[in-house]
Length: 145
Image (cartoon, rainbow, N blue to C red; front, side, top):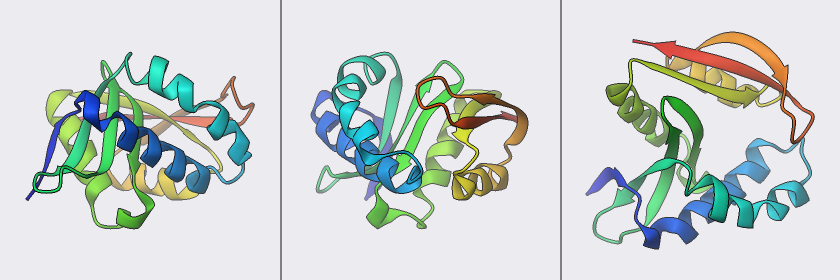
């Protein structure tokens, strides 16, 4: 059985691994070294500053995806590449939608698959801006119930 649960300290390595693996694929337009250089920051800054929920197999305790929230901001939603296309990302977003009337997020303009995914899940583009860490254009998207 699989279920969305609040992340626990023992999930940290799996979360970081999924984030790194999926980031390199989804953000192929940014050098892989950028993501590798930010692993420790993900572990010590970003995860502790957000509320993270994981899609966990309750028998194996393995996770196949996660969503990190800072209030109503979707800071991260990633699914392990081997599990993508199975609806896990949608389940994670639906979970966040039950907790907040409004959600917002930023997604790289070059990440067309993610923009399509968020659009299918009810998010609308609001504005574009330069993401300061990478210099890439980012689309800010908003969902309202």
